[in-house]
Image (cartoon, rainbow, N blue to C red; front, side, top):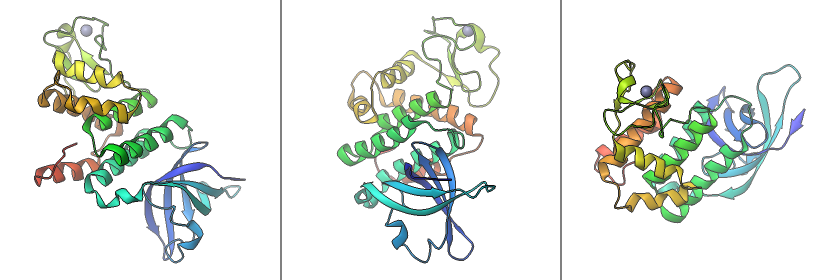
Length: 263
Ligand SMILES: [Zn+2]
């Protein structure tokens, strides 16, 4: 069987002397792992398509009984690699690649996920890195993974009044009302005030990461609301993935080194 899906590279790992193990996210197959034979020796066959920030057309073949696809060739369809000199753009793009690789199941096509990745790259290219654009991608991926956080009512009992004493509980599915909060004891639980909840709901109102970036300068929200919203979503993603995300640690290091903007 062979196929030529549109896709992006999520990561590459050296394999044996001259091969690469390539993890792709494609429109028709979802996330797939493929071996690119000789890719470390000859780059011509893959035409520069085996890097982050490239949308490519990938020629995949599958041996009848093998688990891994074989990557026979690739062509660049669109290229955002001019962003490679911007450490924040690369950090945000790497983060989203890691999220897609960790949150979405193997070989389950979700064409919207590929559109999201491309939409984030477009947003980075047009407007630069944006925290709200990342929140928009995180919420969309949580939704695709079947874990959209409850923000309108208590995830445990459905209570719509979350004005006082509510918490965000990643394991129970998002906002938890004051009454149910007493039985929230897992990791990652944090207070959830109205302003943080309003910020996350506002992110959901935007169609694309690029549009959501309007919230970065929205005077209705304080920096603390944005940070609390970020931490709530990241706690949900981390509990879903079951391990810390390396690209997130890198973004935090950039922030700690006094470099702006923060995620
Ligand atoms: Zn409740």
